Image (cartoon, rainbow, N blue to C red; front, side, top):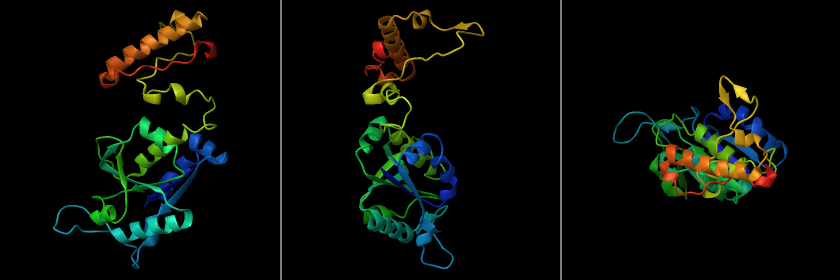
Length: 236
């Protein structure tokens, strides 16, 4: 899968895309992240990407020419992309969208800055507008990394354990994941639940299901109707 990220700050993303899960996926040839500075597609000697809004108002607005030219150049180079515009007013990105993106060959992520985009960028070509939450950031770079990692970790061969993503919170329409414990068994008066030490896989699965349901109802009651997913007892 090819991700193209249109940004004014490619250097801010480069190290992360080469690290951890994204780095592993890149080394395996499963994912390529192309960082493109759309300032390179400006048409004046000052390399201007923004200007004051018509009608007045605070801040600056991103100009249409460098962004549209950049997208058209990328699609001549690679073919059509699923185009994503990252904006606070977009639809909420979630695990189900990450699952759906796995079917794509190429995804383009446009990172905004300043007061936003000239409306003609939206009108001149087809975009899907997405947000990662009801808050405002200085730009779309962090949301772009969020989407790339959420999709990449679902790809077969990326995670060390192939079952890890299947039992995550929200996986396959489920609620929150059950509580996890590891060594040491005793820590500052807190004990690992005895059922997890019992070796009884059926009881462990039942305990995890119950705890996942309780956790979901307490922390995310909006998800309380979703069934939790727990590992097959024989594979624990």
